[in-house]
Image (cartoon, rainbow, N blue to C red; front, top):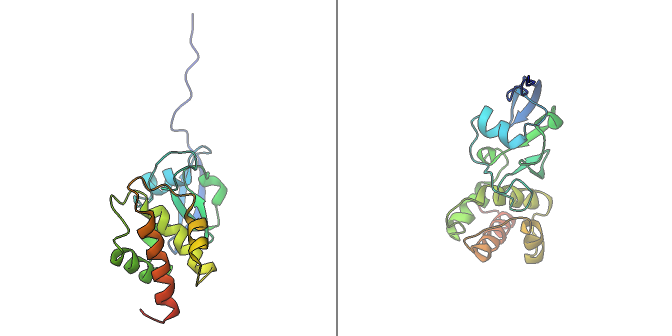
Length: 169
């Protein structure tokens, strides 16, 4: 009995050009490679986390053309020519006030979820500079924080919005 060979696990992919945190990078990606896999394993950007792999926790959230997107299910080959911002690139996205507010509110405990939450909060504040509490809750609803820091996280986003509105740097 002869066995047909199993397909090579690391088949060569196609080269995809992606702008990541302001730098255009050409990276080889197989059709099944997720954006998260490419960011973490081929580009060395470890800030975005793998949580569930099913768009249920938000730990993998990145911004694709400014819109929160799940890195765990987005295929890397589908975002060629687009712009991706990861948590490492938040300074480029003008998130200094947001990061400071998270520190001041002690909005992180273990921190596993925070990279994704920061990405969604950044997108919210870019679109709605003075969100209501309800708008913050709605924007962050797709995120799971197992430590229970939700109230501090919401306060941090509202603090950042208030600081921006007041012109505080």
